[in-house]
Length: 381
Image (tube, rainbow, N blue to C red):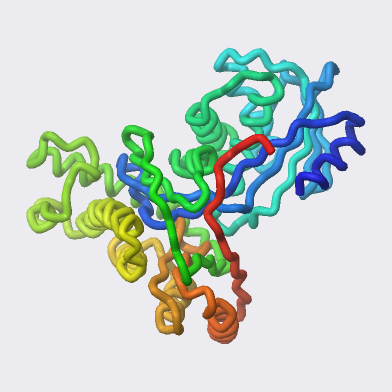
């Protein structure tokens, strides 16, 4: 990809570029906990976005997308990011950097990637982080990685209309090979946890569905959590979010919250505990326990938080009954996307054949399978 990017840059702009890379991410466990200042457990993957960039000394900045085979020009003084266009992220990041006081000059840029879009591995976060790092490197701004992640998050909010948490760009910026990041979404700090899977692997099964419920349901779940906090603060005045409560508090909480709210609060509280337990399981090499935690997470997302769907539940049911699988869970916001599976490496081929046939018979859809290894975060290459 790097050589293809450089060749394309030379062809379009007749210059030698600097090249950076930012990866996509998976989230091992910790779903719908970020907006309650909870814990998440992401890891950077080897697939991602490459950006080639160089100053151009022109009156405009020029960009070319390998994936869309499309060129785009804009003026740094009059940018108008438009939702839905790939250049939106580019102009969004440029706008935020200028607002932060960085003296941008015009540049040429080529971008491309090998990251699957629509699979829930954060291609947009990788794109924004790669753009930010490329600009930082070519102009010697030395922007801290944490700031790059925050700019990428804000670009999603303001210019893509996605009210995402910090996890995606943070994992893309800070990823460490063969490690996951135990990320505290309150302090925005992390601990690097080694991930040694031995004879096991991580495999994503893309359901190839995305239900329209996702956005409205996300807002409803978020509102339910916030409403629960307001009610619970009467009995627990010291809490700021659900993250401040322990699983041992659940019996009391059940009597304090309306029946419609309790399961949502239960999920967030128990999922935060599972993140901590997963970090301990990986540190001690207990993959059997890790598999059990994945299963418990899926059941909680399905039954308590109610963000799964029939396709994901079918895949999860089939996965856990297939040889060599230690655990599986839906990954991401819900109502579609991927199933994250922990399974024996030598069973992957059989697993793919079995699940593909069963899923096609049940839903007339062919799933995608994405093997993932945990890689380094954003960097100059």
